[in-house]
Image (tube, rainbow, N blue to C red):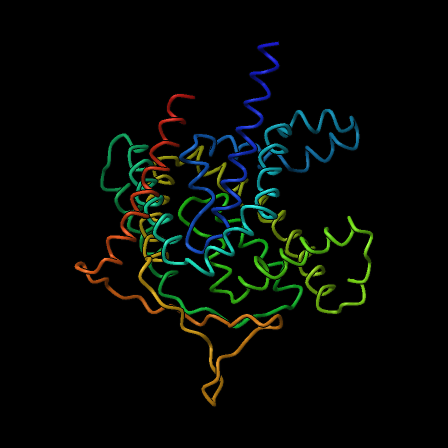
Length: 337
């Protein structure tokens, strides 16, 4: 009985980790891979994902689901990605609301989480030397270049959406590189991680109520089509990145970790809490909106806070909260090792 109870709690915790990853991936500038690092299952994630290969498909065809499931560490992947999916239709919807209404506070929490995560990953390197420092600065430079890049315009071309799917999962496999922020740069963050996800959610509600009127809604059907293509691209990206990262982690682990630390440090600027959205405007100066009525973000205007203002200390409390969350996760991860 105790063994079954222990297995149940382990499974539940793994689902909760997936929920945390899904929530982190939804916030521009935050990497779900950081959750995997802090919670202590990053290498198992990469190892399991790279097992989804030609050999796995051969096992599925010749020996059936059981052999495929065992070879790919299926239990781990199913539970983890169940949490990610649950997050996209629950926690992520809450995050959409919070980001829309309390963006600076949310960014403050995640800013604190990344600071704490940076400290955690830093100590994964036993001894720093010149070579590791070089890779750190390479990662830092790439992170800063990404941060300073300007977003493209929204594009619903199916081939481009498939490419967006490949790019979006980078944040799940590579800590410090935010897939959602890359989508923002590509111009499709709102389209694919807000509008498309909401379309799936409301479609599921309609199906439960046996309401099929949505098939006559061109906008809804377009978003569902984009969701399918985006998902296929994401699966392709997971397989691609996981195989690449599994190789470099085996062959060049210290340099890879050094680069990851640089990415995380560079990503801090992406979610600097004190910023204003700069919306895309037409020649006449009017704010432009996408197909579902949301303003198109062109860039962000970052500014330094007033250290004497109450707002500064209020946001600082949220940063401290983020640090505390990751510190608790880190202690939990260390206890589990």
